[in-house]
Length: 212
Image (tube, rainbow, N blue to C red; front, side):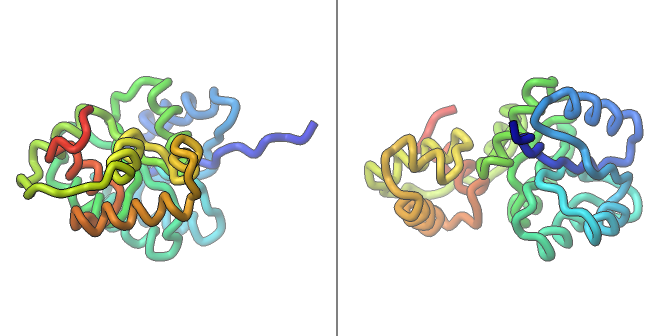
């Protein structure tokens, strides 16, 4: 029987005990492993020269190079990295910047074991993930937008995007091609003036296009 490849995860955080805890949780899962541990952004970027993980758990506030600059630099070189932001409640001022850079989601540092594993799997499959408390804070702090007119199919696609589905999962759920899904996604981004899927989700919930 062939060995199933594990999801390769990087942990970038300046607190050793916290990294140890995350690593313990992750490596108790059969389908994932920690391949990089870094205490700051500069160290992580050095690791990236020789080893590329699939999912990165990224702290925001770190010495030498913070998570915002690190994520920007990493995605410039490897735009297909899946970055999950490790967040505290009081870091709302960084969220919109991280969204614009292209992160795949936000999780609270006190996330439970099962939710952490689910979040990693979801972004690895091409979806997005949000801790609900953080998503509500993002929505609360985002200015009101105007109304928008969506087709029935766009609404169906939007609802699944907001659930964190990948293009492939949306395609299978709605029985349409991935190319059609991407066309609807592009239309939704254009109509809502959103830069990426996270911005789109926030817009949708803020404007009552979907419910959470």
